[in-house]
Image (cartoon, rainbow, N blue to C red; front, side, top):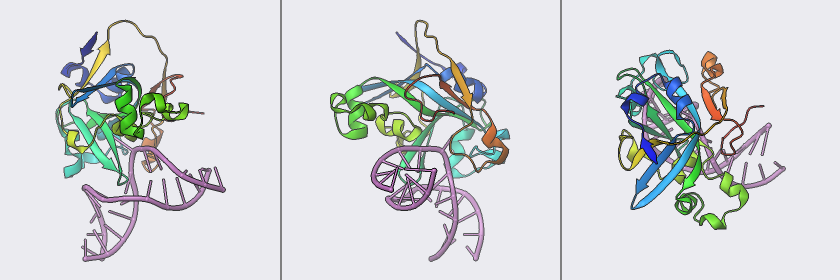
Length: 207
DNA sequence: AATGCGATTCTCT
DNA sequence: GAGAATCGCATTT
């Protein structure tokens, strides 16, 4: 059974939420389709103290306003002209912070996930393509049909939510530096990326 | 109106 | 490991 995570889960520090989101289940439903992935890699962005966060220093522009809203909404933005990144807002309202979902492991809806990424069924994929399905923040957006249309959308909704499996699953958590934020001075060294050790769908491994 | 770049990915080498 | 793709949006002129 999958149990949907509620407000209280996300109404906490983004670093705690990011860590605890590992092993949870991302559920995406649309057009009678059900896609499910296990979250294996996340990053926290904490605006108040984090130069890598879009909302650092109380910065407010139309694009980043979702960061200031109540927890449990999606913050989806476009990047590099052709990709998207998907975050979940955490913490108290007006405290800009969130968690970037960087990678999931495909669990259910494999054909749909494969078609969204490579226009092929799952069985037609090569090994390399399977590992490439959802092993990155923008890859998983393509695979799970997440785009700006879901920006500010509730993640307690039927079309998009996060749940937990009943039952115990053990894994080791690795903490490391976040990816792609080398411009952010001291913040680039914060160990706010979390991933499941030895999971094949993690986007970048540490040395 | 013009400029510059990014919480990335893909395709080479 | 380097370079390109490609454009919305914030910033500068």
